[in-house]
Image 1: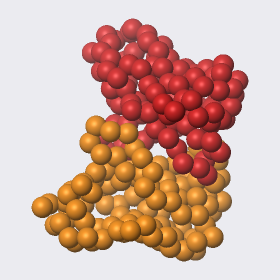
Image 2 (image 1 turned 90 degrees about the vertical axis):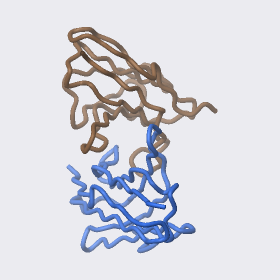
Image 3 (image 1 turned 120 degrees about the vertical axis):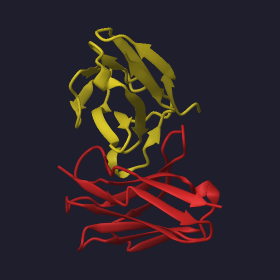
Length: 111
Length: 113
């Protein structure tokens, strides 16, 4: 089955800095890569996703890049703000009915 | 639309007790799943369903049962609660399965003493 590795587990940045979270996956059949944000005490919610026919996707301050050859995808957040503080999960799917999630990255943005 | 709803929000059980966590969605989604979330372990899949009458095991199914008699409901049953089942449980649904947005419920925080 699919295996998704996510790094780092914790990321601490100053407000205004950029943050990058990286994930790797194992199943070459995976072709959909969503990112979820979970604020403290809340449910995970989709913030951005990318499909295998696209190399990069941007939505305001967040962007995701995908390298299918290397089986690697990343989340980039620019000009971080305190409200970006949350746990971020990557996921990979396409080879099975249900996506496989990474273990999560706790992002802390210091004012 | 209420989306995905879960009850209860909090529950405390004693070891050996049984209970059912309820999950319902009103979006006519075929795919539903249950995850548990523990510190540092991410979201681990317990059971999932691709439609009414069809269920399958995920990564950590032991100690849990599910059924899917309707499209809307996907209850999770703990047969004999153990302290290792202390966790936050999330139900999720998706229209088109793995390659579609997963909509999560608000979660149930379960403590087993």
